[in-house]
Image (cartoon, rainbow, N blue to C red; front, top):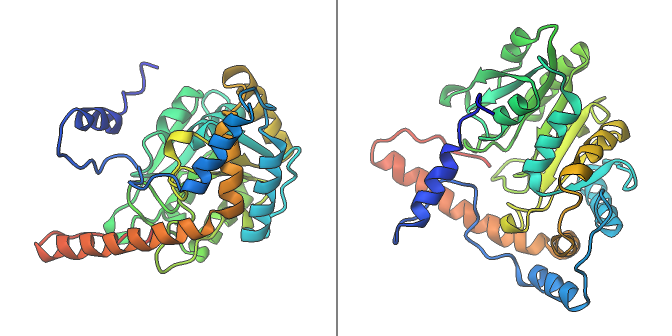
Length: 308
């Protein structure tokens, strides 16, 4: 614990919360309320008395809907009984994944900059983060050659998150395929954080697990916070082979037990009927994106144009 600093972005968030008239551009927080039909589903669940524990894996109906969603969107087949785990946000899924796969001293390669929790989760699991610098000149895309150069006998996994927080960078399918080839050749796991998958502009998202030969060695992380404006509901998921999910569930059942049943019911409704709401929010995010990028460049600042 002494090896990791407190989260600077959360400190900034708490500071701004105490100041009136300030717009926080810190955490990835949609300013839309969760769509009403999703909130209504949760309210109705409370009225029906849904206030109990669920299975450690999460509600079966939610896992079935998630399995359908992944099949419909990416043509990926995950068994809802053994290959999907509902978590308390994607942050818990990331923590569980690291603790499930890492032994002390194992190395995890990841881009820099990256989401604030990546490196601490590796350290807390006894691993060693290996950072690969990215910059505006390479569109903040992690270089396959730079990954290859950092692979050692201690490397256990590659951790990527695209579309990226905080840069908004996306990766082409070709670049991701090169990373997949490295992972296959060195028998590495890939943890792919795809929480922003639906928030892309003018490009198509590539789900890493769809790349040839990568489904069994990819831990796919996703959730509802960003696309459905459900940050406070704390519902995420992991999709992986049954051995990895079993290990993650073993840790999950002793720490969190299960995600809240009300949030899980809301997530079911989101998967069933949330696509129109996503489209409306993405349209507005895109308008804002263009205004900010143009405005910053107009005043002489060099502003990377995020695609996600």
